[in-house]
Amino acid sequence: EISKLKNPSLFCQNAFVNGEWVKSKTKQEFSVLDPATNQEIGKVPEMNAEDIKIAIKAAKEAFEDWASLTAKNRHNFLKTLNSFILENKYDLATILTQENGKPINEALEEIKYGAGFIEWFAEEARRTYGDVIPSPMKSNRILVQKQPIGVVGIITPWNFPNAMITRKIGAALAAGCTVVIKPAAATPFSALAIAELASKAGFPKGVINVVTSEQNVKEVGLELTTNPDVKKISFTGSTPVGKMLMQQSSSTLKKISLELGGNAPFIVFDDAEVEAASKFRSSGQTCVCANRIYVQSSIYAEFATRLSEKVSKFKIGNGFDQQTTHGPLIDEKAIKKVTRHVEDAVAKGAEILVGGVQRNGNFFEPTVLTGMTSEMGITREETFGPVAALYKFESEDEVIKLANDSNVGLAGYLYSRDVGRCWKVAEALELGIVGVNTGVISCAEAPFGGVKESGIGREGTKYLIIYYFNVRH
Ligand code: ADP
Image (cartoon, rainbow, N blue to C red; front, side):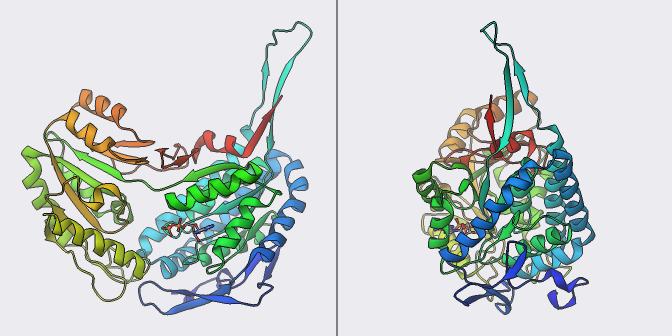
């Protein structure tokens, strides 16, 4: 637990602005709770628009020097940050589990996955090549140069409190941008710990700023999206908030990257390795993402039984307990949403094979539902809870239609041993990411992002860093 950190300086209860640990000018603070116990972990500043203006100003003042460093200089800073993150991974995982609730081993995986983005973009920093283009005009030469966009406002969610930040700042800092990060109110400590490590790694003041707010989030968001000194907004979170931020950003025509909600289909054909397919479910937080599980009718009953056996062995509990396979949901609101989804499905004819009920506090039993139909709420809305909802289908064409019948399209999965079928279905799915016979789809090397209302832009890969540059010739 946090009281036993090897490096206690990583637990910071102030915001980080212009290289200093600061409170809000208003002196207000808010409490952060451990979702497993609802006990207070600590307090951070409740900042308002005035506080944010100061952070933006610091980032703006730091920009010129940061942008004019050599790419190799920025590479070195990021490499150092990467090694500091890895050296402190147990402490960072501890902070993450304490505020987010996920099992400690999953938290550790997130820290390593998150550090992977810093490492990757440290390397990419040196490969941000320009171009020379043959001109149609005899006397001209066309030189293309990439220039960092400027100050980036970064807003991140609580479900990956570390990695959602590292994958944005990795690219932004590598490109030569400076950042103002607003982490989710439920999980500010992971963000502040990154700031502490960056400070130790010698990043110049103002390059990385972390601001915190809970009640004032609307005015803070408004300041970030309308302040003319912020040139880009990078957001991961819900679709409604993403749309609002996009609208606000239009007043100054900021560049935007949005990673929004998905409603992932998970398709299992009758020729799939059912064993492999169902195993995916036990990989913790990821299973939260497969929202609609389509199983071909001839194996539907067997799949449901086997999955239920597996799910009934899951152990929910405190993330620090080594036996725990699934931690708590983030808060009461999340429990209400999952409960509403399960009740709605049952009222419309679904059957609960396992789970289906809330346990004490923020815990919800891992649940398997069968007999799902398109009319049920889960079909349209991301559940964000430990619910496996099983839909029956007959043919390839039918399941492609069902899977694509959604206004969002982030990730999806399909399981089959028929190569032709894999290609046909994978290419027909309206998604940004398709896992074929795998549930592991995200790493620094691969582009992450959605189509339809799941977002704008991609993260990771050489494709992300381009979003932090202006290209000029
Ligand atoms: P969820 O909490 O379901 O993950 P949200 O979109 O509500 O999704 O939250 C994602 C991030 O957006 C969090 O950091 C949250 O504080 C922030 N946020 C929520 N509402 C606003 C807003 N009006 N302006 C700016 N940021 C917001």
